[in-house]
Image (cartoon, rainbow, N blue to C red; front, side, top):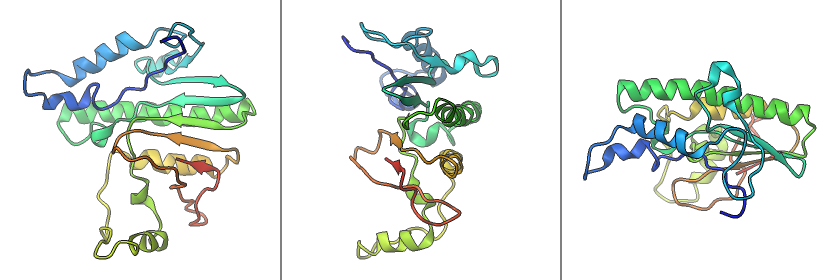
Length: 213
């Protein structure tokens, strides 16, 4: 790549490889390999690399070399290693342990990204993950009713099932209560292109107008 290249891992890189039929693989070994291959210290990939900060700099989180942050054009950017397939939760005890450890690091990194954007007086914040975290599970009752009323015969479950993403969405909402600059949230997965404002304030039950997916 001629330009700077920054990767945030996804479910096809390691978690979903447990479904391979041709040969048996260890997803956690693949995760270790991804971390070794794609995250040179202090810089991006690409021929024209840029400087990046890694969560590795925190001695308590030095395993998470893939969580990166940088600034460009007065905007703060951060990647957070949140993956599809329920963030690797609910499969096996060792997978659940990996999810819990990485989630704690991810939450800390997300909070630090907001803190850094505030401290630097950034024009805004861009957060990038691979998974679709399911914002709709957290919508207040009335917006959810209005949305599903568009589709005859379809209704949401009365009680959404807990997911591996719930805490991420709760932390995002908490941080946005005290952050007024624009926040762009980019994610992959689920194979549908969306531009919307899918996050609601628990204080007002209104959408955060400065938060765009």
